[in-house]
Length: 108
Length: 240
Image (tube, rainbow over all chains, first blue to last red; front, top):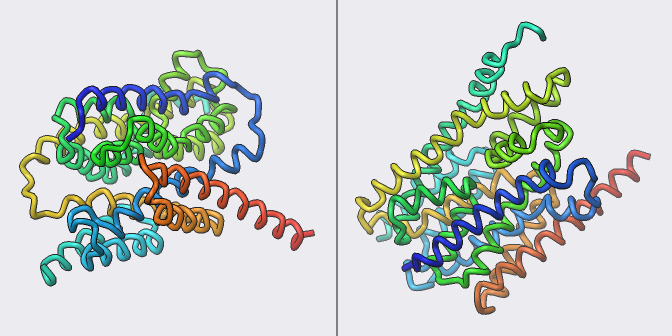
């Protein structure tokens, strides 16, 4: 269970931090250009963080006590493949969820 | 064009933003459901969407808090997911840099993937627009995107408590993230960054306080940047 104090701390700091990131150039820095190497690293933050966040959740799912689980693994593979091929987030979610439920129904 | 009124530009933005409602509704509803599953009440869930207004970062924060990650790790990870907003901000400077501070602040708050993507295309197309016309368009795009984001988070939070446990909602976050990752893989550099991130996250999973994720993030960024550099040098050579 999430502690209420921690929750509000995270919400407020994350809110301010996100605003800060959105405001940092238009609001504060202005027209001064950033070094190219900084921009080059910034371009990859999302693809560097999200896959790392999701990998352990797929390989060691919490719901099965951390052991590899066929329906969840299949759903993960279908979701990422669908996203790569279709570039459509909602379609990928839909196919992934369908695979998960199909798998749980057949194997559960 | 002189025939364009403020009102027509606003509606132009709203029309361009409208298709994203189809994405916003399920995505924000899902956040509401996941957040209530993690123990947030309806009020807290809506406040979360209102304060942070960034889907992937919100999911990241909730997932890490649910796993009792230390607060500092929650914040660093979620903000890292949002770092791209700084790039958006940087690329909007030439178009909005001359607006008043409060206007720039308001635009900053509403800078999300969709408002940025629509606006940057339009601003480039309509070089004749004044700063005021650009802002009007920007807020026009935000109008059908951001209010539904709050509203359907609330809807999700309200229906979330009614969803039975058998629905395997533990896997809602992984599926959502995986679906987001696919379309981000635009170049070899993105793929390499993602691959290193996955490998590092699994290899360093033994580290305490979810530090493995930070290691994975840093290594992934460095990989992406290096591969981009190598590929651009190669492209330079073959074109010269």
